[in-house]
Length: 322
Image (spheres, one colour):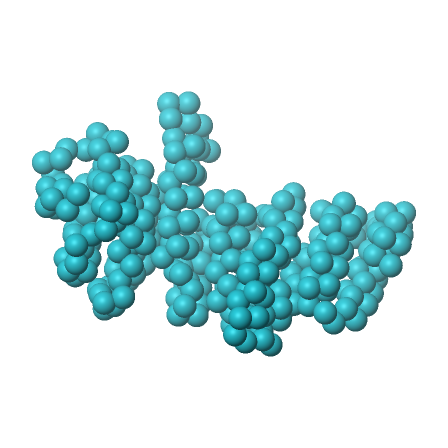
């Protein structure tokens, strides 16, 4: 039916809305979560070139119908994905969880498809797509689902889009389940923004590039507030502190800070170095070999720029831990 529907849509565009609605309805008959997941993945791939990427009033085609179809299919795929391991316990659950990790790419394909739509604009992303994705994430109430879909949002969509929506994204972080690795999400976001700034910086940067950089640097104060919040939460959980993850977090954010070439750059660097030193002291245990390597990597970051060691207040004391 999916193949037949795709062929019909290709020949008569006026049937697109009706056929996609019928297919989404019929596919609910597949009750097995794994089979249902693969069937919906096949549906998405089969209709990839059939769904309209722009409005066409003469043929009654609306881009909004494409968005609704992909988002609805994603929501159902996510539910099926969660069901794979929701009704089992013990050793079988461990096997099912492993299977879920292996199948996550099927769910991520829907987000990649959304990100690749030519008619997707910042306005549509901000007002329709991102809020819908966040609703799917929060309603899932599942650790793996929330972690993975947030990672997909960070990596799949344009950095300019996520810069525009940075407050909404960070606010969503705070609404995720406590077990979700927020530090890992913040690391991914910081590293992406650092690469974005590096790509658009240089002597041959265009006026558009400069505007993009200005927008990226503009989100720094917002990120600082969230960074400080993560540090505070880490201090409160000193016994269970994952010092290696903490150092990864601080390294990623330090890289981003060194790209933000405003007048207060040294203050930003010192702020992160001081936070790192406080966390290590709070940890109050000898650092493992992995942690020492990560700290060494962190201390290399400011040396890659034209920054004076004499202005880095806590740099000397941090070196003593390496």
